[in-house]
Length: 256
Image 1 (cartoon, one colour):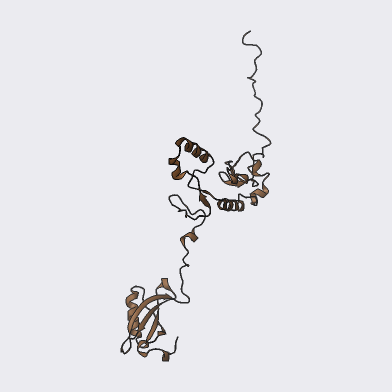
Image 2 (spheres, rainbow, N blue to C red):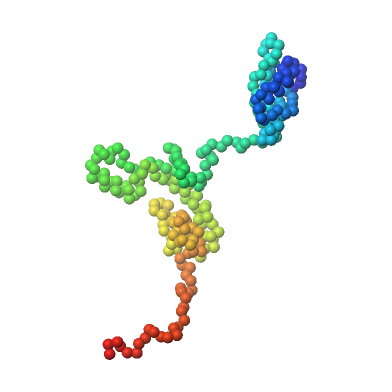
C-alpha cells in the first residue's frame, strides 16, 4: 500500500462510494471487507474489497476512482474483479493446434490439413493439362500414376515418412517393446505378417493374426509376439480311441 500522503484525500475518503459501485457490479457475488487503496496516478487510486463468493476465493473487487482537476468529488472510472495472490486461476490458454493430441479425431469430427503441412507434398493428378492432351494418352498416364499411388492431390513427403517411421518404431509395435524382446522370432518370418507397400514396406508391415494384440496394426519387421506362426503345437488334434465295433472293414466284396 502507498503512503496516505501520496494519495488524493478526496479519493481516499470515498470508500463508501467505491463500495456502492462494487455492490452494484457484484450483484449476487457480494462485496466483503475493505482491503485498502493503492495510488494509480495523480488524483487517481483503486480501492480493493474482498469477494466472498465461494467460487472466487482469493479474488478482489477493484474500484478505480479519479478526481478531475479543480473538481470537489471523485468519480468512478471502472469496477473489475481481479485475482489476488492466492486466487485460483484457470489454466493458461493453449491454442487449439497445440492442444491437439494423437487419437483426438473421433467419428464425425473433422481435422483440417494445413496447406503447409511438412508431412505432405503435392501429388500428380494431371491437373488442367489432362484435358488439353490426347485422351487416350492421358488415360494410360493416369492408370500408371494410380498404380504408383500418386493420383492424389497430396502424397506423403519424405518428412512424413520419417516421422511415421520414428513414431512406429518407438511404439509398443516396435523392436524395443517387451513383447518383441520375449518373442520366439521376428515378425518378418511370421506367416501372418503382410508387408506395407512403398518405402515404408522395407521396415514395416501389418499383422493379420486375430489372436495377437497387434492384429490390424502396423508392426516393424523386427517386432514379435507370442502369436508367431512358427510356434506349432506338439499335437495338432485330439487322438480318438479305437472303435468298439469295427465298421470300416468288410470280409467279402459286394460283387461276389
